[in-house]
Image (cartoon, rainbow, N blue to C red; front, side, top):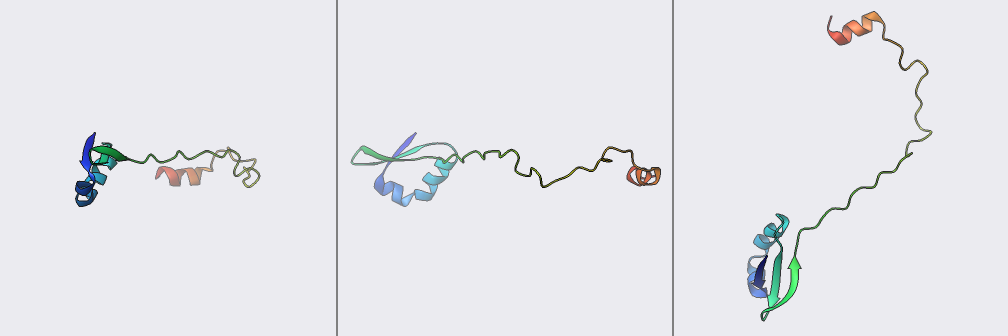
Length: 78
C-alpha cells in the first residue's frame, strides 16, 4: 500500500487512481497522518428475479414434435 502526501496526490491523481483501479490501495496523508484511502470499487452483484416472465410466454403443445424432412434438410445443408 503506497502512502503519499496530499500535495503529491494532487499532482499525481490520475496515476494514483490507475493504481487503485488495478487493485493497489493508496493512502493520502497530511503532516504524516493518514486521511483517506483511494481504493477500487467493487460492483454490486445483480440479483436474480425468478418468475419475471411468468404468464407472458406460452410453449405450444407440439414443441417437441420432429421437424418435417424438408425443413430438417435445410438445417443440415442437404
